[in-house]
Length: 220
Image (spheres, rainbow, N blue to C red):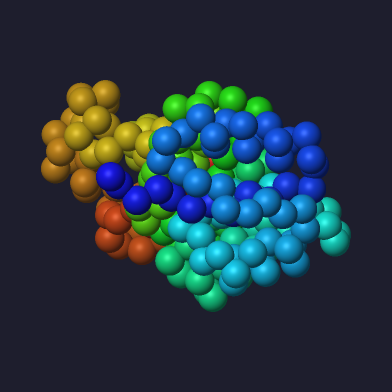
């Protein structure tokens, strides 16, 4: 039997926490080992339980601002084997940019109203617990059509590079991008290299650089 994914759940709303817990209880792969309502309780629970994953609200006591993001970054540094999924009702890309600023491994950002789709939640949990990342596709759906500002970083991209970057933001791999845009895999790789260079996110086509480039696009 595969080892279950231990989860610490944090949200200051009892109702929302109970709702998320009910969804998690439907998943055979997970085991909720603690529930918290504040930043301090969450950090203590991580020390006490060493969970595989934390699922946390973005705003909790004491300040109700960005505790979830701060907790994720602190856990990343102090407990690198613990993944974190931040739940938010806010689709502003600034929060996601801050979350992924120092890397995307074992991090996820989901919108609260979308996690009612249990399979979406399950896939995000599995991806983050296995060392990957997950950005809610609805965030991309909401923002992928946003226009780049005249002086924004994406304004340096060609129309074709913008199309490739939009496809990256949707989560498509190189093969899928090539099929959609009727390009050769070599051409897709060339465009991605140019995109990364223009956005100054690094020269390697790895998961972190793809997430960073996509978030810059969304922020535009």
